[in-house]
Amino acid sequence: MPDFPYARLRRRPDVEAANLQAYDATDALLVGRALESGVPGHEIAVIGDAYGAITLPLTDAGLTGIRVHQDLATGRRALALNAEELGLAGFSPHELDGSLLDGARLVLLQLPKALAELEEIADAVARWAAADVVLVAGGRVKHMTLAQNDVLGRSFARVQPQRAERKSRLIVATEPRAVPAQPPYPVRAHHEGLVLVAHGGAFAGAKLDIGTRVLLDVLAELPGSSPASVRTVVDLGCGTGALAVSAAIAHAGARVVATDRSAAAVASARATAEANGLADRIEVTHDDAGSRIPDASVDVVLLNPPFHLGSSVHTGAATRLFEAAARMLRPGGELLTVFNSALAYRPELTALIGPTEQLRRTPKFTVTRSIRR
Ligand SMILES: C[S@@+](CC[C@H](N)C(=O)[O-])C[C@H]1O[C@@H](n2cnc3c(N)ncnc32)[C@H](O)[C@@H]1O
Image (cartoon, rainbow, N blue to C red):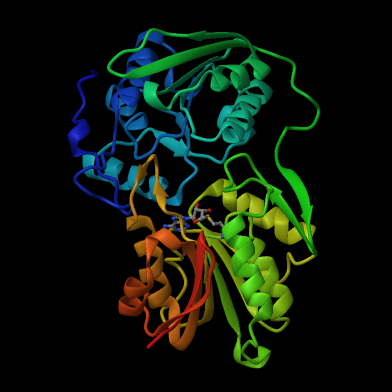
């Protein structure tokens, strides 16, 4: 393990709990590999650094000019805060684009969960990095699959899994293949009255999630508030933006804000708004739990909350979004939410927001409306 105070790294503003760490053995393996390689910092790109446990040990070892892409707004903030606390600099944040990868000779990647996200990243590295780039991708053995090697193999001629160490494994991909003229993402799909556009990392891809569909059905049948009284609608955790699009159509006079902590979701929701001819009606923001939306300024919040946090099932992520909805709703404003029926969020919604009624319950999903007290 490189000599670095990993235990001082924190996850905030992401959920912090005794069973949730800000680093894992994969981070240390990736750092060790980079330090051995002798590649200078300005030729290194880091992708998927959760809270800084890859980037900061490298800058601590004296490397500078490291380019970093993190999907989550929370991860970006945590990296900045951890860097500040440890007095470290020497890196710059980037989106997943040419500015991140141009001329990169070493790319360090924490493997994403979704194969689509990996496919988009592998294509980006093959497309933009140097011809002799070495992509080192790592993960926890229990979360790794052979399909990941296959996906890497579409963009790289050589894919070499390494021996597992401390329950983590690195895969080294080299010899980038010629890339297709069009990147594989974003993809798009048509649903009744709606086009969804999705980057690899967006929840549910270009499909309409079944929970989202149940919420949309309920919204379509609601007698509804008069459009004039609904001036601001927020799609909180917007993913590809299906709820935002339906809100913009249902409330022609309202301002719609779609917000997500994932950059892939934000890029997808922007493209979805555009594909539905609603780019001028929907404002899309990359933010943690809509933190930049003023208190008590919103009439309606639409929410299909996450219930998986990384790979551990943890409902803290949904609670943060309920609290955010409570903060941004004006008194009398409404939160409409859909969740897995097994989760029984109603008492929590009543405590955090206000009186909560069940609008629909299927064996799988429950839709509720909470009125801000
Ligand atoms: C279950 S998906 C729903 C996506 C979309 N609203 C839909 O219905 O298809 C939950 C979304 O919440 C986002 N999310 C989770 N925690 C968040 C947070 N703290 N702030 C903003 N977005 C968050 C995730 O990135 C994901 O896109």
